[in-house]
Length: 355
Image (tube, rainbow, N blue to C red; front, side, top):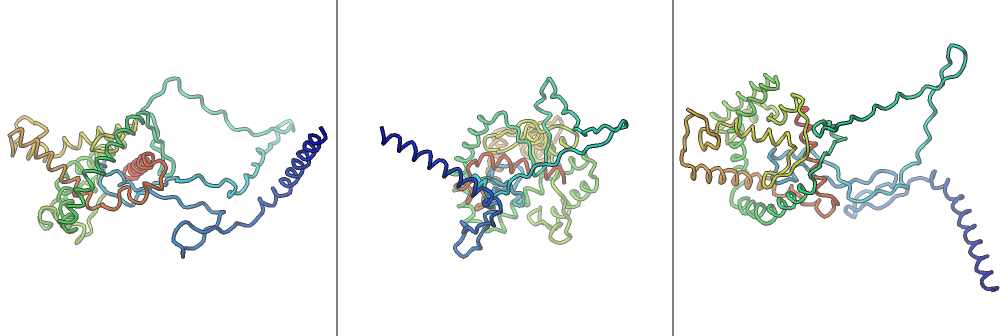
């Protein structure tokens, strides 16, 4: 019994001591100077202060190897790989009360904020806001399906596309790869021309037409970007997805399609429209049938396998050009790779629409 009483007194004494230590240490921690911690980079790298946010790995929009938009490595999406230490941030200061204004009769009145608008009774899934590059509405109601398709595309890239791209990268020099990529881009000028006109960008339409004429002649069929390299004639690529956005169509749900990669529902409709607008698809190897339009190839089997071969070659060539910029270096450090790729894609689309 005496031992039990001693144990209880010891526990009370220890708890009191812990409370006093906490009350003494709390203000000291709030005002303490930042503590230097070694960086997780190279050994000779500069040290990082704990009071500053720790840099997180980034995933470029090209992290989707099957993206229909092509490589744009300048767009990056931050990805949180580890939770940050909350104690490293300064304490939140209480906000000042709202200003007091005197009324006519001398009584003090407190200025209040207007009441928030009630939500609409009916929810429109297409009424999602575009957001900004720093704040994106990642509307993804089909996430379970998209996750499976993302995994499928990852495995397809890992076991088929990347090995084929490595072989092509070993066989073909980089100038040849860039020439093929430039030729594909040059052939598809007509949808970009139409979308410039549809958005009222008449200067952009003129630049697209000029680029096509110069690159098709002096650029040897588009293998060289003569308009850019010699005359510095450049203009952003416009597609039907961007045109629909300019016309006020909301992006709709995020969607991952096997082989073709990331879209929003609006961009998926725009991609199909761009295929239809491309004269190559109804003049050379027609997958779009137009009455009275001339066709270079008429045999169905030849058209099918030619289209498959052309698109497979395009994918492999683009993958070879970006052999070390897709998933490498971030897969192990990123907790949610799917979410990072989704965020990067949506950022790229917002930037393209604003341009």
